[in-house]
Image (cartoon, rainbow, N blue to C red; front, top):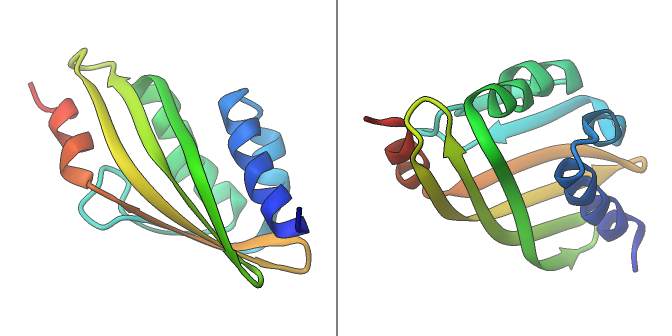
Length: 130
């Protein structure tokens, strides 16, 4: 298994275990993290602290049992694509959602240099509406 694929798999394992410091620890200091436009956290966060505040803390505060479960990985050089499924229950509404995702991870110098999320944002947003 390549170093990049091992790192990508490790991010999902650490996230599932709630080990956010381990996740942030593999991010480059200037990581560019892109959440899908139109989603609840859409936009670009730069740096691990921005990802923590703009995405991870919000997920923890707003969702019960939020999960990002990869089902397949595809690699081309220093780029890894993960295909999988999100799920969770919105704390405010009690509504559950499932949505497919594609994540594009780009690596440099043994760290995650960038992340780009592709998903059906309408499925997640529907769970946030009464």
